[in-house]
Length: 388
Image (cartoon, rainbow, N blue to C red; front, side, top):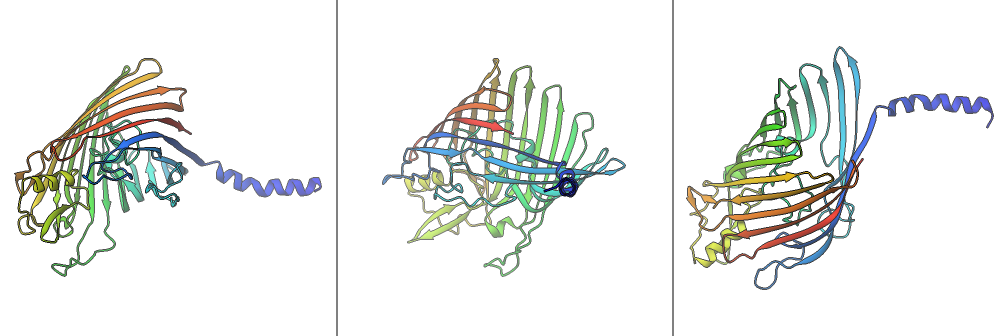
């Protein structure tokens, strides 16, 4: 290739290179060894219904993303992002040995941002608790582990077909509002009418000099017809500065719990994450010889759960130990508490910073169910986290 051809090739590539200059590639690779003896583990339960212990090499929510923006002038920018979940253990999260991670599984959007009025985005977006809270749960762990507060944060997630507005910061105060459309509008088999699972989510925040307070509220439509979540409140507050980390959390979830009857025996089901302890409810009913009927516990009666959480940490040089405790109160069904349907959980964790981007992380978690028919759950984890 002569010099003329080389010059022409470079000139042709320059516009593409200039366009790529505004694209940022980022992500985190996280994973490690875990020993899990949990009801959610892929090892299942034994003949007595007790969880089996198993050694696992698990991904801890690794991700890779691409984002960028364009200055449109007058303080206005076009913003975009495509973020993807990846499993470095070669699975899709179901331990089936094959990966099926697809594109744009995490927050992915296009939108506009202004210097003085905040930003508006549309696409697949996090609810407020998922991306602006979770201070009570700073750890790394898999879906099968109780080495983190996964039960407490079980409703933190993303909404398809959504639009979200985030305000600017006014002297430490800010808010966000999300609306998610229900594009399916399924038919309710009982009434024959179309259901509406649209959702809206409000988040409020105040942060100043290390102190923070945050509130999340989310509502779903037609939950009584779908056997799902209706209202969800969470409050978090604490302090994160001068090497000290303290976070308090409280949440209340209300919804409608479905039942399933087989061979004359009616049990509880929980397809929407309303109740964290369906096993405990069913164990209670069995041990008490309770005559649970669909008429007694149908989808017109509300289910309510309450939980409180505390996490404390302190940084000594490169080491940050954490302690977390969660109390799950008894579940209320139709205004009546189910005795011994709550739980207590604690997590001990240690984060060692090898550099600004790489950490060694280890944790031990234990869950004690109030119902004696259920076994304790426990998890141990040791792994690495790298950010880029």
